[in-house]
Image 1 (cartoon, rainbow, N blue to C red):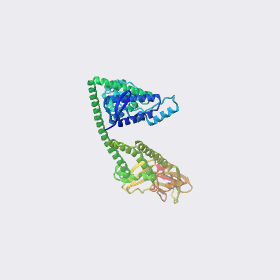
Image 2: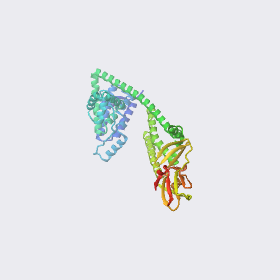
Image 3: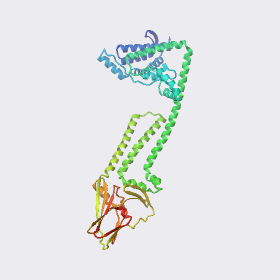
Length: 497
């Protein structure tokens, strides 16, 4: 047997169980502590008590009020935290202590809700009106007019908003629907709600047909919203599955390309010859290739991973630290961008210094009156020589499956006392030693047969050197009184004569 207590609430007498009374008393005390002790707070508390008395009278007229009835009414009005936040309560208490003449202000966050008390269909226009502080009739007129002009797009938008906007069920949600308000406005809001509930209750009693019609409309609307929500949920899952499959394939393709790039590039570009894969090795140091690979994986891979995460979230609807994941992904992506610029600067600096090597070549004196410059008669005997591309003054070839980098020399002719030849090799590098090494390892062939000097038409950059703007200058001095005859092919390489 539960003990009952007789209470007086807003001038009305009620019989309530002791447990229910303790819960109600605790609820009201919490609100009193949060609102403070000024006149406006007292007015609000009185309005809340009036609303509770009204709901008691409607829901339990003449019966003993039980705990579940109190819990239902508290849920309807809203928990204390939904009416006043703890931080706002502390500010109001501080303000009331510091100045009795200054009224406290509760500033809430404005949220978008559907207004169930002023709805025609779903309460979307009423909620928008409350959020933007505009008469809902304005939004209703806009919706009706645009529905004909937009060929159904407005109706679709309305349905989406109906699903996305939650219904304002509690007093706290109704207050949040209108945003920041003062205590006095909270009191006015409760008064208005009290009067609206009272008048609607009387109106519904007098018009049962309207009540049944409204109830059916509400149930139909809620059922439609639930069905559309389920349809959109299924579409979201299907979209998520498509996104996951696409992003997984993209990530696998990206990783697979770098893991098997030699084979892929060989098959795609050279019909199975893999020399194309060694092109980066001739132009970039190993560490630069590693940096660029990491940078590309970050810059391209991170967006794919984010898309994969979003797809999984659409499917499984799990809760996660979205801000943390987003910030981590952004930091990694920006790190990839920074790594690209850093590697680009490193590669540019590898061309910073210039170096040269001068080789004095011994030429045998000849009694002939004419000196002949002929192109070397030794040609490549390989049948598997394939041209690849031109790069500045260099040409890339494949010979027996190996990459060859060749360049054309520059021939300078001058007059002097003796027959002599100097070969100047030039190149660039990260420092003086590196530039000199790149120049020194450049290979150039020549030979002499009495008065005939055979010059190779190309110089070759050795495999151990990186391509760094290598050039070769052939300086030949012809004795005074001697004639010079240049073969038709070599004359194109002569710069000065």
